[in-house]
Length: 373
Image 1 (tube, rainbow, N blue to C red):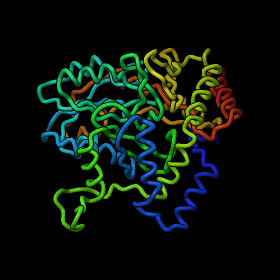
Image 2: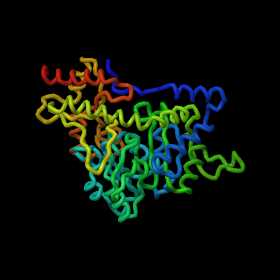
Image 3: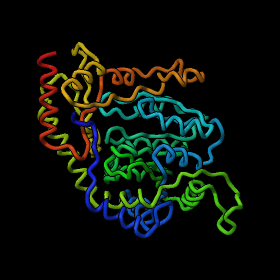
Image 4: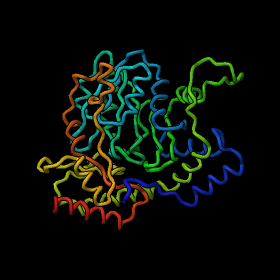
């Protein structure tokens, strides 16, 4: 079976983790955490990095420090992972969902514009499968309406967006930016995440709240509420080693996409699209069945599974989730693009450890699916 994702772990990762074990700095303090925070922030063009235990809590923590009024409306895409919506709800805020673009799968800017009300306080752009949201438009809207921006860059390590003639990396936009370093990301710490900001006051609050708001002078005197959202020095050691190779990792993703494009271009599939203002890392190689294909993504995945190719489905939109309908949310919400692609899309094996031979096998398997349906 060719796995949908497998991380690439090298000697440097093992050496750094071994160093942690030898020194005894294995928990939530140590030189690797400090280094990883500093180097990742610098890579993304930010001043401050606050490492946390995963990307989900990065979003929750980031929203918490903005201190938005209770029930404030936050605009975010329906086509995303549940973590985004849960971060909004867990901060007692109101999610407002928008549909996605049919080519990039990122949030529709016109839909964002139509959903802004007097209660809107923030926008959460989510970069999807390595392709950036049009951040120039988002920044402009936020400026006009005095909105905060919580950037979810969990799927876009190293991706770039053209703003005012300059290329800027994802993670450099808005009040706070959030990353995940899960095992399938462009760089990994196994689990783990980070919040980035240029605001010293926000950085101080983020650092305190991720660490139970221990007092600066009296440790067990608490002036605020926080969480244990800490990353370990062991995880950060892996991250430091991975970051040293990020340019190679991203180049490999682009090479994978070129190979897949060359092999699949004649099939009834929509292949990854890149806007001229974007530099996508094609984090996951996502394909969409054209309307003329008589089966859906679930059947497509079954047929590939029978040929020893593992895949993953697209997100099911947040507006279609039973748990939120049970809470009285989104029952009247419709996002037709999200609904369509959720049923017609999946992504192919795209991990760092995949070989050229495995990519060719995947391509042959797809050709066989459509030749012998």
